[in-house]
Length: 286
Image: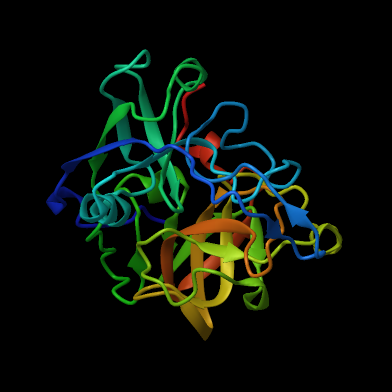
């Protein structure tokens, strides 16, 4: 077992400006997979009572983004923020009552998701400006040229305990996801947003034993190649962290997983560990 050799010392750290995004709503009902009309909170804003480390499914929400959802009103700047920000990057609040508070990027969805200390989440508001110190895109693993890190801060793999063992990468995960559950997000850029896992019906969650999955859990997605876009490919694996949750149940959607590593399955050894979660591994602020 050996630590990973990377090109981390040659990566560029760039400051990205963003702001806490305000939720929007069309005023129309969505329809869940049981055929029921629903109006539920979900994307954007500041969620102060659900954080990384909490369960995914008990909440009355659709695409629940824990912590602060960060974006930009400039579409080009928003795209750059989405693509360049990496899981594990540091974020700094620039103004407002929480000015000076620091947090960590914990995932991507429609926005970049950032976990802050509870005291900051209590006072953060839409429009508050943030600086994200983006570094990680372009990361390479020496000896594993067929494996691609994606949206992966240089220290993330070490924090998650990823090591090289006999020509394979040993990755600890809290759960494994079969390919048939992968939904919205397939076909998109590997660095943009995330890929949903179609766990929209409570009886399916219970049958598969996924009730215990938490926001921030590391999961393995089978027969998924997320190196250059996201798609089905037999004999490949993608690893990600659970970025958003809730049980809104819109068909084709579900909990979202942000990819940080992908490659041929024979290049990995999967090890189950209940504590494989960003809350324990980064660690995140209290």
